Length: 291
Image (cartoon, rainbow, N blue to C red; front, side, top):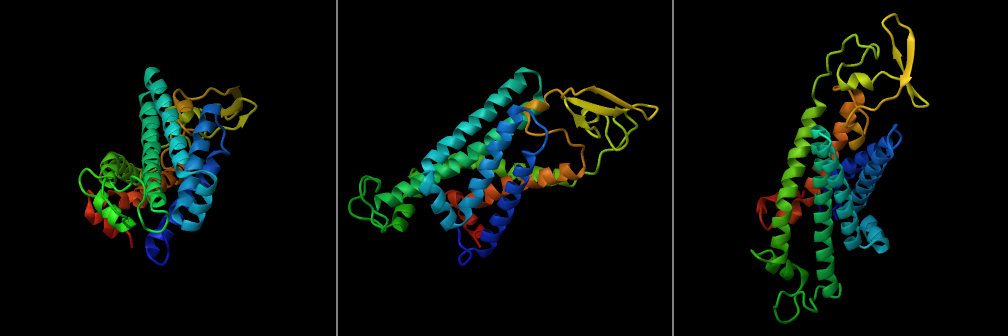
């Protein structure tokens, strides 16, 4: 949770990134898709909404008063299992691209689970202090006497402490989020794919995209443009492997292609930026990213 007074750039930046994620995930649900894809897109929308609510303290407090953070962590952990299952199914069917795609989404949900679990641990520590900065129960790591939250954080940030272990577990997730966000930013800048005179009509690309783009879908059919310009209605056959991803095929460089990857960047980089504070015990310079 952040405040405009303490970290104005991070507060506004995260709000903008996650608001765009939420809007795009909502748009994805309006696109033609299979039931499997719809489940995946509902999970993406849920994560975008939760991340948006996590930015400001009032909205986060409202959310956890309805669904505790520990239950949110469990829910997103199960969502990660869903994407692992899709990945296994894709690899088993020889669809390597779809398999890596789903595995990447599983890693993203794993990062979300890790972040929420870390917040649940912090909440439990705060509750152990009775909400007044004094530690009660067994949260003091074996230290006698009351302890305020700052002292507890300092103690548990040492090697082997709870906060240090949280940072260690999160290191591979944070690496994935950063690399994935940079990859998405690169994809946004890729030039449009060369077009060819293929049966789908003008403006589409050959290959798998040719089977889906520049088509009109009505009642399970699509209309293709024949060599003589006539319309040909054929059965709407999905592209192999696409049912195991979250969206339709989008030609490289098309508007929806670029917008989709800006949303991917916003989701991954936003989660990375939001979580940098959790890695401070291992990487102290990350504290400078809160401004």
